[in-house]
Length: 68
Image (tube, one colour):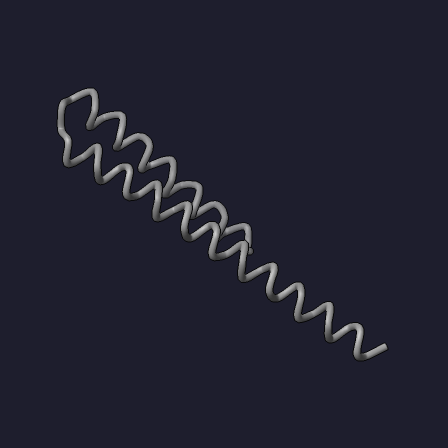
């Protein structure tokens, strides 16, 4: 995963956490729920990027084995 992707995913999670806390403090349930959703989405994207990177690493490993 590129550093940019990782930073973007972490930022989305942090913004979601802030929205959730602000929503809870102000009694705005919609904002709190939106914050939770943002966090979940950021975590899912991060997991997807990690999975893609592992798959690419496995494919490259197989290519290297066959090229030797």
